[in-house]
Length: 560
Image (cartoon, rainbow, N blue to C red; front, side, top):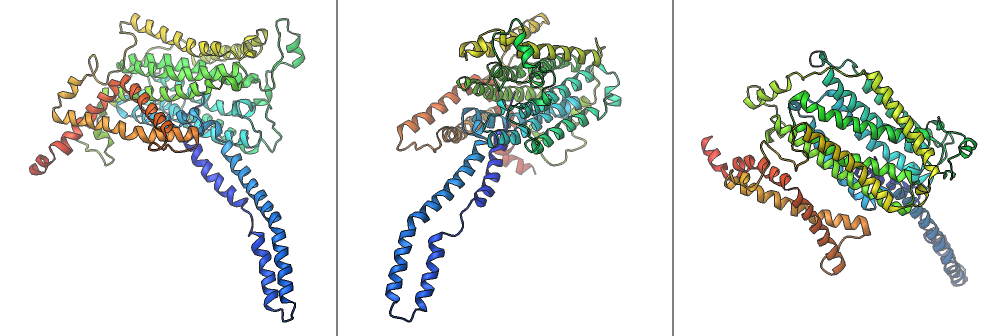
């Protein structure tokens, strides 16, 4: 589940490419350096042969022009190759549709972290740290992407030792989330004494990140090649043993994932399912059903992980590149839906726009006191059905079993070698659909309404009637949110076209550019129309500020 790295990647590209350009800049032009000598000699030539010498030297200079131009062209080619090498580092992130989606996914994820960390939510410290740790995974894909492209000329998916190392950061993220939320639900001393694990999980996660950084810095100098297996391929069966298995019909391609890398992917998917289940149960721990909405919000991120595994199942063929775009799209969608879910949790626990005020809050504010009291409430602790050791053993068994089944079991069938887009699409959409269906039935069995569009307050949801209750302020706030969409739509559409085609749109003279930009905006408008609760919620959140700072501003001044 690679995710979110393109914004930082593009910035790093600029920083890296500039020094490289200077390093490959050619010296002073040869024409200029050679012309200085004849001029000096002509000034000191007192014989009658000055004209002859000048003519001879000018002829020499003219004759040297082709070689000079050839040298300049060679230097330019070297510069171009250097720049292209750096740009290639992020070619599969920033210069195509997947890159656009990954870049756009960063902002909603940061919003998600902000709302999730609101003190009134009582989000477990270790679980909250786990979600934040995901940013290290994002950061880790930058150096690994540079190395895979510049050193090996491959995509990250085909360089096993870097691929597995980067994904290990994602596995650490999911472990931290599961441990943090699970302990808050089962440890009766958590509120008073804190985590029984102390800082150990965070230290271990930091060590994982440090080891990956060391591997990126030293791996190539240690002789690691493009297809060197992650963790030295521990657990891989010898080729002779594999070919001797009675069910094996195919030999593995060179870019096949190793057992450790498959284990990392399988554990990430399984742990994420664990996390979805635990966060669903956390609603009962906090007496706040809005937490179940976060599980629904995580469903597209689950689909993103399935996209990555499906792509690897088919050995990363270029003909199934659409899986990478789908992964990026589900990442953007998932980051947006978890941000919405975290916002709903936050406002249900007392968050208001006043929380955005960077200045110290009043210690006697009724709202602040209510939030602090809610944050100090204890959890509804339930006894754990199994210990962490048993849970870890189950996860390990599932991970190892799934890894061997995928790596060697697929050699018994033809499907992974057919590059079948229909089958790939069925896997990508089918598995998350089954997961969603199970949660739908679970919600109904627990007396809920199953899946529904998110509401941003109490009751059945939002409508324009709720906005109109704020009178002129509500109407103005709604207009401002709509204007904000259209103010952002054109720059975003223009940037998307630039990232895709390499040129900025000419909407005045080029009909195709104009049609492309309008089509992008139209598509975005229809997607936004599906998210009516989001738009209405934004208008309602903005209405008090509009009332205080625009509509009744003069009245407020008079009162002062």
